[in-house]
Image 1 (spheres, rainbow, N blue to C red):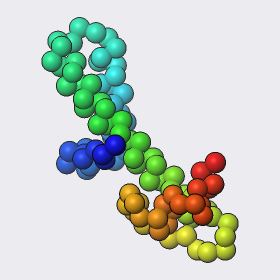
Image 2: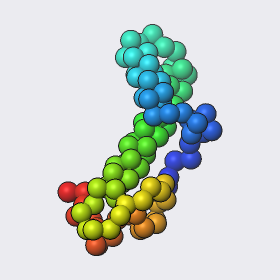
Image 3: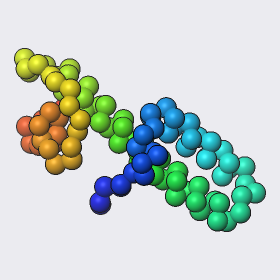
Image 4: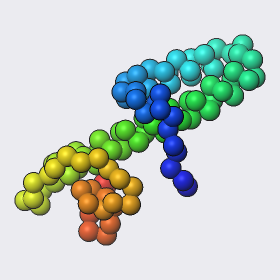
Amino acid sequence: MAAIQFPDDIKAMPFETALAELETLVAKMENGGLPLEELMAGFERGRVLTEYCRSKLASLERKITVLSRDDGAEGEWSDFTPGNNRNGGMNSENSDLLL
């Protein structure tokens, strides 16, 4: 599955803002009464917000794993890049860290 390209307005959001917008969208959709076009636009925006929030949480989880590892090496902060096995990327040597 290809990675989602987040719109600039979402990329600029803190996690908490994205989550709050997602919660607002879900509440509007659950209440009903939205025209079909608005419902679909909300669904699509919600899907992107969900993936953005998941990616932020996954990145933070990888950082915590690196910083709290117990192999005697010092952890360092770096942003996760898919396909980059440095600092917490999945490979056969550290795949058991997420159990």
